[in-house]
Picture 1: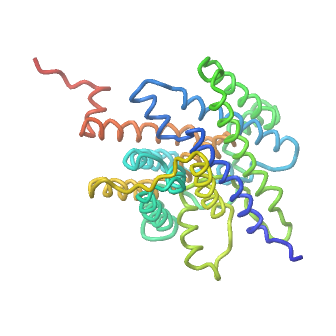
Picture 2: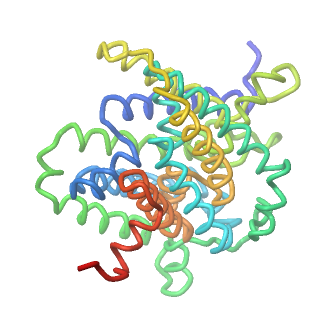
Picture 3: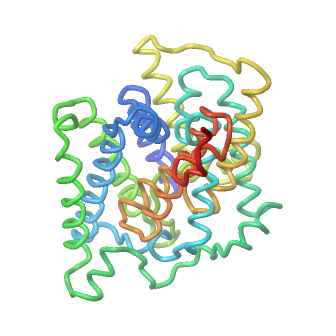
Length: 362
């Protein structure tokens, strides 16, 4: 029997992990924008804490793997080739605003497709094409202008755990586990979170799946004669790569991200069919379609510019404790915050007035 190539092995692992994430999105309601909406519009931070717990569990497992010698997390480009502050912040702000227009992120778009949402197919196509154009097409000039470096590995190790190792001497694996435990403690300080079994299970599943991505590409797909980059889940550039692969299959190679894209759709579809929640849905009018398309453009450009989406930076980079992760999360939150208020109040300036009142009329 012919041995599978590293790319094929990685893609199959991405398919399996993507299926788990698709299940978490539909069954556990694991959604970035949904969590932000709960907090911004309803004052409920439960799903934000679920996201934080997923990051913490992912970091625990990731630095446990690093400490055991199974993977070298410093080889991931989130640590070895960090993006610039400007690129991360601008890209994530743009992504967050686009996310509010669409009603979900790239990951959520795939989960919606699995649930029968036809308008999300349009968003997927627009976001995928824009992301690929931002990688090496027309939009790449603007991305390069923001200072995004090439993804070549160097020993910079731009992560909090490695900074502690450098300045204090504590091994990065121990430092990473300690920081993750602090985050676990913060998240579990919420009684509502501790009492919600579904939320706890979903957070654990997502966190372990992110760590599985590092293990799959760093161990299972390892080949000393055919190097494969260590990576985990992200859903910005892989959307474009999946489209290119479908169109040029005989001349293209499988990758982890391509398998992950398919996995989320399949996992979400199976879950919604079992739940009997599968429904065909379309846009209500042309105005909604415009929002879907514009949001797809903004997420495609913003996600690649920030070197990751809500999953790429918000979970994968965060599980590696990369410097860029908190910057990206803050940027996406602010972008979504502005977008949500603009949609609710009909003006982009309205949310700014709530922070800096311009005076009131008598």
